[in-house]
Image (cartoon, rainbow, N blue to C red; front, side, top):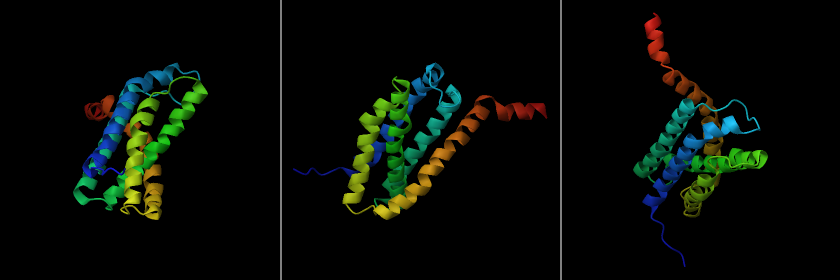
Length: 175
């Protein structure tokens, strides 16, 4: 039996799932990076990380608003679908890989598997089966969007450190 999908709900489930996922990470990931025996690089600072995930979460909601305003098949739809694909990949790397390598729970894995993966998959499958997303165009947009999202993380960490350290106000006082 095929059930009709409420497309409005489908649009907003993904950013809601991303928000839950990022909330889990914001709460537990900074502490986990300090305690884990396997080093993935630098430890994550609470404030800069929380700033970064707040911006990335906001971007997911903005993309959903874009889809809501312009409809399925719009560029906003491709951007949110690319976000879904990127977040789905994020579940496997680094979360699943980190959990296996460290033999500990990697924060974000549960919300990724329980919320992000199902909502992202439903969003992608619905768009592709209804013909609103073309696979080739999705891969082209995702091929640009996902690396840009990945690269933005370092920039967002730096901006978070700058804002949280009072960088702008401290520079004004020194002059």
